Image (cartoon, rainbow, N blue to C red; front, top):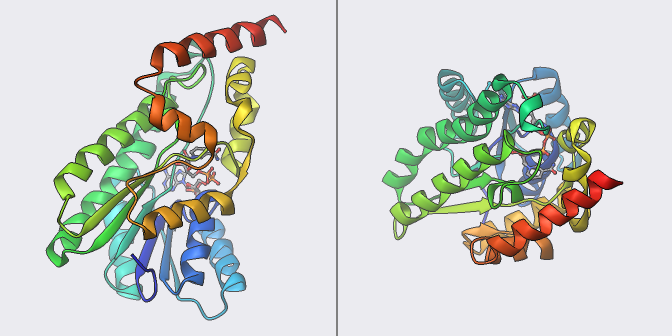
Length: 269
Ligand SMILES: NC(=O)c1ccc[n+]([C@@H]2O[C@H](COP(=O)([O-])OP(=O)(O)OC[C@H]3O[C@@H](n4cnc5c(N)ncnc54)[C@H](OP(=O)(O)O)[C@@H]3O)[C@@H](O)[C@H]2O)c1
């Protein structure tokens, strides 16, 4: 798929990976719409896209993606400005690491509401139109924690597992329909979310996730859009996430054994 003259709507487009994807899409000639909650952050993000791509068509719409009526209203506003959505990127997400017993139930509910239902509501809103036109692309931003459960991610990982379940099931239903689904598994990426996560990440979680290094949002955006343009279903930036993608089921006993060893060592030190 090419992005020129397409309307790309990016949830979580005001920051981090979503914003980097929006900039790259605008550079390749797409009209972009950014959706997230904070209107001041949205206005800044719009300026960031315009600074990178003078003259780009950039709309913004405020919505909490965990509330379906707000998602529908934001979609409608974006479509009034930029036309029918051709490409949907769901990047809005939250992560609050911590030990299971330390995390309040509300964090589990929030993770599912924003990461899973927030993605679902946006997909629900655009998919009927894409199917009717027999073209479009849905890009779901997941996580390595959507492939394997990790120490400290009892709230986050299940919400991302649900995103993977949605993507895999949709892929089957949409095969041959002209609508492509892509799921992206970003490694640790230098964004405000990662900085916030690091404030509450248990030492064991830090030790387990340390090996993959930290990517820039733009690097993740580049690999993501390369995958979308060649019609890839799964995009796994970096060797560690690629290994997880290919081995997570087959290698699960080994991965669990290895993570347990790393966690024990991290606890000792
Ligand atoms: N950074 C990483 O290391 C990493 C690794 C793997 C996967 N991911 C995933 O990548 C995606 C993007 O994360 P990021 O690191 O780029 O984070 P980020 O820079 O903090 O951006 C998160 C975006 O989501 C929006 N958002 C959060 N809650 C929302 C809600 N309820 N409704 C609407 N928008 C909401 C934020 O804007 P407002 O707060 O203004 O709403 C912001 O635009 C997430 O799904 C995350 O789980 C990140």
